Amino acid sequence: MELMNENRKMEMLNSFLVSGESFQATMWGTIMADAKAIMGIAAGMNALGIPGGGAVGALANQYCYVGVSENYLSFCCISNIDPSVMTGGFVLAFADIIEAKVKKGLFGRRVISIKTNEGKMNLSFVGNTIGSRLSKVKQVAGIEYLVDRMMKL
Image (cartoon, rainbow, N blue to C red):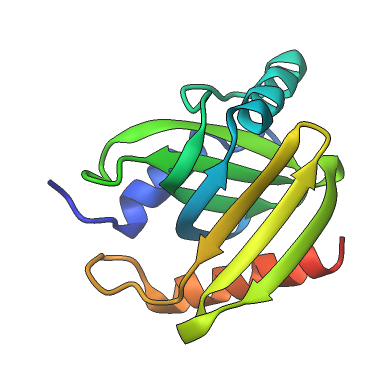
């Protein structure tokens, strides 16, 4: 079993990068969303010809890599047991976000609640990368970048 690492994170996220976009920030977190939200997002992606799939179903505390590009959030869901295994993913346009709320938690945890026409999802992020081969500097910078983008919506 391989630990989370920068190379694998980018390899997985790049498979969900929309053509013409580039990632401004990347990080790992935990996603919680109901099946309705994920299925609605996946249906919209397919209609637009955007890559996605595999993560069609309820996501309860699922680890994921998140990439933030100019116009999209890319999600790559990974196995909670073996992070080298991608279980699916999807893309969400910033334009499809109706509302976003950011909450600060204990020990630097950030929880971002996102509402779209398809449903709601929560993203939880921590700056701690202990037990992985991810860069703490990139993780913290990515979280702050995403929080800043969400606050401007």
